[in-house]
Each structure stands twice: as structure tokens, then as C-alpha cells.
Length: 328
Image 1: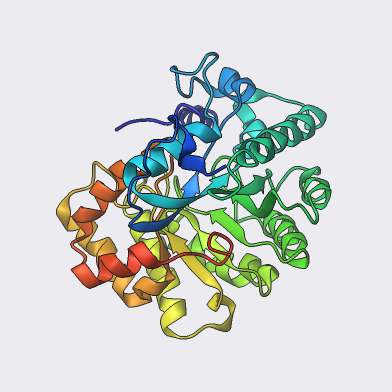
Image 2: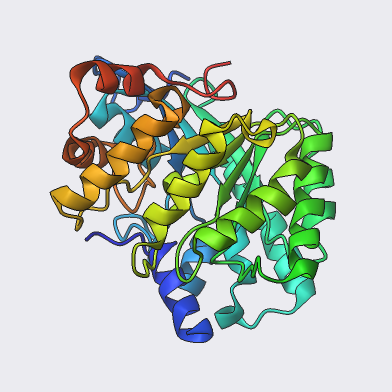
């Protein structure tokens, strides 16, 4: 399994702690056909972030992940747009031992890096800021970007931010962060899964946190899963969302899911079929293509999707699905 040295290594450290036209690159070479509307889950990383959490792309000097890298990967896979989710939340990793002030400063700097990078390819890339929702600086950081045309959404990551949804206090804190994003009409990407996050935790999220998003679109990363995996938690989490959607729970009316790193490259056909069954329960219209670049490239993720055994029509639906913020 290829590892994104910005994200996956950082999460490994966490586990140890907590148990232009963009394709103008290349001198005007003809663009590849674009059969996929958008990759809804991609990451960049500054050289500073990479120096703290591990190497990113060693081909860059110093190692980093730039917008040009993302656009090149999109072109190689025939994907039109890319949604870049800032990695700024990683500065809150306990393994980095940064003070709250340093977390705030470096979060701002990484979000600015992301904004500056995507501005180089305005017709191809869309940007989301990110925060650690448990930091006091989270809401001020969201307010700093109010009205931004470069970062038009919010990404939060429960596992990397050590969010414990079994804590009522933390649920309230995360809900306040979502409410601030909703007040600005921002779409929100939430990585809920991974580690010990299970079906009961998903119920707590839906009951006590998700309502704070109001009318904002909420994209559940990795179809409710994530790394590290524990037992069949990822599948059970997705099943909980399926149950609520089948009952037309009003709180789920603006819920979407991305398929980044789904199915995992190491998953067998039986596990992939179980995920596909839940996808069909929910309906393909709520699912978005995503690669988790640079963990996987869009091209690699497209190959992984074959494990799901989707019909030709289902695959076509997935190709055409595009979130309002990506295809605005």
C-alpha cells in the first residue's frame, strides 16, 4: 500500500500516541479526455508540514505536495476538477507537541499555502480550509476565511484530531465548529472513521453533531471509514448511515459520501461486495469519486473501484456525480 507521507505516516504517529488551464503544464500538450467529473478528496502539503510529519513527494525539493502535482495526477486519470482538502489539521497531532499558539499559527500558514496553491489553477482546483475542531483557534480560523473565494469549505478529521465522540463535551465543541461553518454556508467534509470509531459512535455523530451543520452539505470521507481499521467498524459505520437514510431522517438530507480509498487496495472481493451493498442501499447519487491523493492517485483509485463490482450504469453515475462546490 502506498502511503501518503503527509497523512498516513502522521496517523501512524497518532496511533502510537493514543494506542491557466491547469493542463497547460507540459508546454501546451493536448489535454487527456476527461471522463470523470471530479476528484472530491485530494491533499497538498507544504514543505514545513512535510518536515514535521514525514516526507511527501521526494521528487520535490524540499519534499512537498503542490497543486501542479495534483493537476498532473488528475490529467493522467482523465478527471476534470480536484477538491483540495487542506492538511492544516495535522498541526494538532499530539505527537508534534505544539503549543496552542503554535498550532494556530501553523494552521493559518498551511491554509494559506493551500489557498495560494489552488489559485494557480482556478479552473481546475477548489480548496477547503481545515482545523482541529478541539483547538480554541478553530472557530477564529474559520472566521478568518469568511467570504474567501479560494477556500470555500471546511475539512475536519476526527482521528487525527483525537476527537472522542463519546465525550459529550467534545461533541458539543465539534458541533459548534460545524455550526460556524454552516453560518457561513460552507460545505463540510468530515473524516469520522478509523481506529475505534464504531456504529455506536456514528449514532452519536448523527444525533448530536450532524444537526449543527444545518443546511450545509456534509461529505463523509472514505464512506465513513478510515485508517487504521479495527474489526469491521468501517462497514458498520456506513451501515448506520444507511439505516438513517432509508428512514429519510431529516438530518441526513444533505449528506454525501466520498469513496476515497474505498475499497482499500488490500481488501478482498468479499469485503468490497459488502461495501457495495451498503452503497446501493444509500443510492449511487449520494457518492462522490475521491482518491485521497497523494495516498493514492486518481488513476489508482479508479482501478480499485473495480473491486466493488458496480454495473456499467452505476459506474457511469459515479463518473458524472459532482458536488455543487466542485462543479459550480
